[in-house]
Image (cartoon, rainbow, N blue to C red):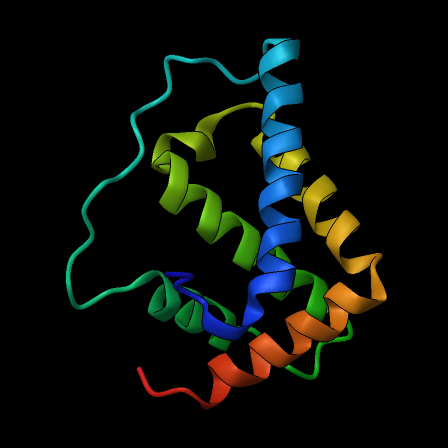
Length: 126
């Protein structure tokens, strides 16, 4: 089950971009196989969706960079959930995050999907 519901086209592009960037980082030696194992359990009260909604909700929607910042928080939250918090300390993480976010926000279809997701997250309880 996709934890973010109706955003499956955007999520598929994100997953593909993340996989490509992680493979490239590993190939360049910036990411190592010694990273902390992925998280397997999450406190029942805090789902990935709730975490993303809270983080994006803290952004100023009138900021001209809102969409890009929200996309970056989305990507970062998914990567950390998938690969563990140790990823944040990887030297190539911020570069990869920026590249994935730039790729996503350069695609008009993805931008529309993200805007719909952000609106849904804003209106959802939790």
